[in-house]
Image (cartoon, rainbow, N blue to C red; front, side, top):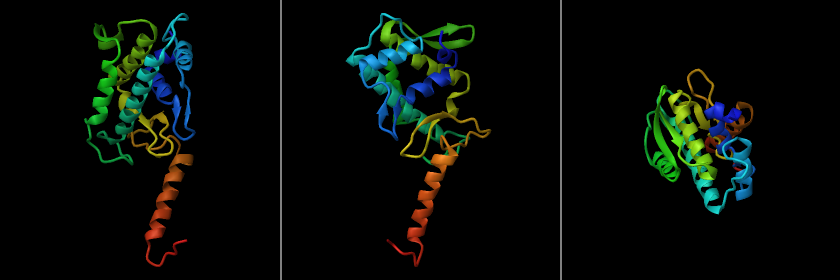
Length: 197
């Protein structure tokens, strides 16, 4: 089993970050790239190969996860740029549920409680392994700490390790400063007597 499978949170973050929003760079732009990505993480066997349908399923899952992590800023006990606390449901969870429904998964009872498990091998089973990692992160209490940067040009996934789960940016030095500078300039533009260039 790969290190990523040992740490389900890292696997989820790694998968979401296969698309770099700022650079518009996709690490899995083709079935071959998806095959290689899943293979490096021990999610598929050496003879398995993705096709275009698998790639579409992977992209749908990735973007549903990105939206779900974006909403983790809105959960109770968090403070983010995307809204107030207490938003627990909505279209993002429906999107994630739809993505999960397309994967070969089952609920299994283990000594640690119910878990999701892939019921197929190959690429569909590998993608189901990512969904299972989501549930493992949730049951381990890590899910609310998985977020994407609230800087709209970034949206890089990260683990919020702050004590009160209030971190908004993947990097305060880069994205935090970028957001604060933009807000400062917007305030200056609306101040009486300000010069509009």
